[in-house]
Image (cartoon, rainbow, N blue to C red; front, side):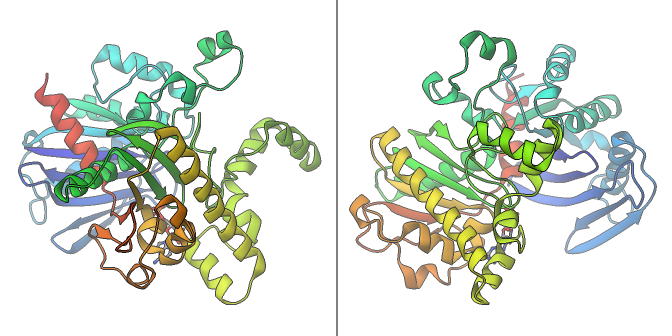
Length: 400
Ligand code: AMP
C-alpha cells in the first residue's frame, strides 16, 4: 500500500511517497516558491535529485508537478496515480473541530474551512493543497493534525484562566504542536523500555529544533505540553520568545510603536535565540559564537537549558514520577552540549547522563545516553513525523 504524505506551507509543498508494507520511503521532494518568482521542484529518488524550474501559480499547479515527477517515465516511481492508495496531509491546527486524524469528505472540509483562522499562516495552505488533491486524485485524503496527540490533555492543563464563555466562543486554549513528533518518539521510547522490562509510564519528550516544545506523556498519552494556542508559547526558540507576560506585550508594542499584528510578527520572528544573542536563530551558529566567547549567545543557551529543566521538574510532578526523558529534533538529536546542560546535576531526580558517551553518539538511531546508575532513562530518538502521518492515514483508510 503506497501512501503519499504532503506537508503544505504558504509557498511550499513537501512530500514523501511511502510503501507501507515495509514503511520505506520510495521518493521524496519539495516544491518551493509557489505563487512567487523562482518556483521549482526538487525530487529525490534512489540517491539522485531531479530539479525542474517552472512557474507555479498555486498549490494545484504544484501538486500536478509532484504527480508528473512521481509518474515520470524515466525516474518516476509509479506508473499511474491510482497506485497511490491515500494521501495524508499534515495540518497544523485542529481547533476543537477534530480530535484525531480524519478522513476528509465534504462535511469535514467545511469544518476545516471554519477553523482556518486559528492558524492563519499554515491552515489555509493545507486547505489549498487538500482541495487540489481532492479534485485531481480519486484516492481518500486524510488530515493528521500537529495538535492531535495533545487532544488528551485534561481541561485543567489545557484551559487559560479567561472567562469560560470566552473560551467557548473563541476556542482559545492550549492546543500544543509537534504532536506527530511527540507521538512517534514516545511510542519508540515505550517500545524500547518495555523491551528492557523497564518502567515506561512517565515520559517527557523534548522536541528541540527551530521550534521547540516539551510534552508530558503519561501511559502513552499527552497530559500537558509547553506550546499553547499557537506555537509561540513555552520555550525560547530560534526566533520565538516563548512564554512572556501578556501585559509586557502591550508595553513592548508601545515602546516599538507596533500594531497588534506587527507585535505578533515581532514575537515570532525577532525574538528567541536571535533576539537575545543578536547572533543567529540557528543553534549551531549560537554554539559557534559561544566558543568564540560571545556572552549573549551563552545567555540564550543558558535560558534554553534552564527553561527545559524547569519543565522536567514541573512535568515530573504533574505525572507523579519520571521514567524517561527523550531528546529529538535538530537540536535534541545533534546537540550533545545542550543535552548535557539540561541533565546536569539532577541526580536528586534520578537523572544522570553518560557525559562521555553523550558527546559523540551514533546518528540516525535510538541511543541510550543515560549513565549506568541513572534511574531515569535518557534517550536520543530521531523523529519521523512523515511516518506517523502515513501510519495514521493508513489506519483511517483501513477503518473506512
Ligand atoms: P529542526 O527545526 O528540527 O530542523 O532543527 C533545526 C535546528 O537544529 C537549528 O537550530 C540547527 O542549528 C540545529 N542543529 C542541526 N544540526 C545541529 C548540530 N550538529 N549541532 C547543533 N545543532 C544542530
